[in-house]
Image (tube, rainbow, N blue to C red; front, side):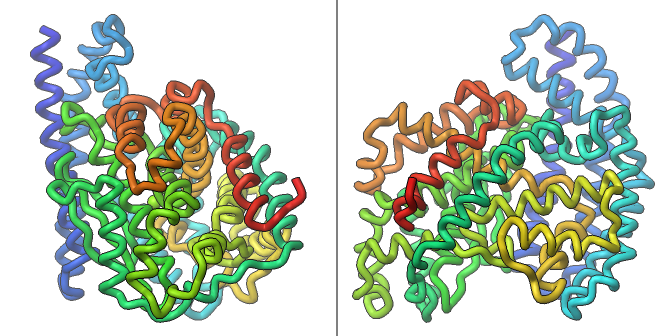
Length: 503
Ligand code: MG
């Protein structure tokens, strides 16, 4: 009986989901309110829940149900929730059962030691402290990839964990088309007079910053009955159900950009999770499609909306009212240019829209080279600095500012940096479609109205959850796969005007 089996599968998946959500609550608490001394016990609790969820998900019963359902599911409407549920669950089940539990435990142990070594190495700007740990992490990642052999490229299985179905060759093709254009744009901007943004860097009352952010995301459509915002050292979004999505923000008392754009960014992630169809909840389809699609949502609200002229035509008078001493004498146009200033920098997390993707391409190329074995771990700092010079024209004075700046590799996370840049590209693809479908979008934004925009995103993207693979979703909505052209059109239009570039 198909319906019985499907229902049984859903019941089992629902229990796995509940355990993951309970762990998410503990994880959220760990980053927001937990006292420091709680860390050890919390680590144990999270690891126990993770183990139970893994055991339940990889159970023989789920395997058998998936096997039994597969032939029948082949006759169902391929885009139905049920057919997608079986397809996506089967895929995740095969992945989860291919990796031995001992390997997972060993990776976690290596990562926890590597993170400590990375912290010390970064504090002392001494790569040699981290080098042996990173070498071991690279070995483990190669081993991980080999659980999924045969593959076209050793990096494919790593990328697939974050972008289902996407291949290394796809990303390389996209980035190879993008890189020369971005480098040329950054060089052209560097030859123009720089815009001023000093007024962004002065004391801004923290409570007022918080309240302004709340005002903005309330207008975006963040539902305070179904979500909340707290503070954390590193902003993030987490979801416990489609009716309980949490975001965090970080406020810098001496720079208004951190809190302002960070809040809009996380709100973009949250609106996505809040928009997933309720009937997908408690299944592997009940969340965003991939990291890149998620980032396409956060970047859309942060940049395409939040750093646009129409947006500030609406909100700038309110911001000036909130901070009269700091911004009362700064014209709106000066403010607009200031928040869009392009400045090649050493640190990825502080990079502007024009230079950000170059930081990502550099990391992706180095990750691939490490996995392929074409760059040795000991030569990584040199390779890093050479690429920084080539792409961004700046070279770090030490490894703390260079190869040691990000925590990700020390956590054993190799494979997902590209999703940040892909998210930028996809956000511009959505934007071109949205502008075609909502011709007076700019006027709406100028009036502080975001309802049509949010409704469009819900209809075309959010409600589908993880039913479609990222490339599939992009193609379904835009008529083509991930494509760098709309993003480059966006950058050239925006910065061509701000920096008066010759077109
Ligand atoms: Mg993000």
